[in-house]
Length: 114
Image 1 (tube, rainbow, N blue to C red):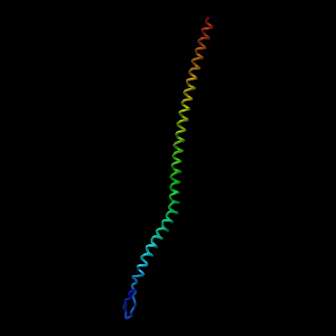
Image 2 (image 1 turned 135 degrees about the vertical axis):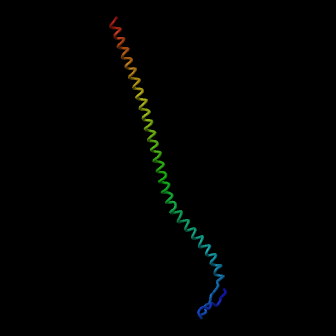
Image 3 (image 1 turned 180 degrees about the horizontal axis):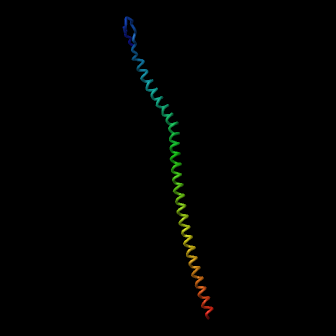
């Protein structure tokens, strides 16, 4: 520890240079910095994960909503296709039924002529 006299406005002050204390404080300063970073990382982990969780939940809900909308559209398309297939089936059945009715009427008219 080195002391120097400092004179200002007629008064003398002792200025102490604490090289030894600065060496000790340097180690403690590193320790305080490490502890501060550790506390900061805990804070960021706890509150950062909450924010990230909210963001992820929002993103997942948007994805699920878009998937459900796509699925609903696909179901509507499939239902329309099935309805078209049923309509085509019933149209062909009606045509065949009409052909059979015409054949029966023709046969009936032939039977009456004989």
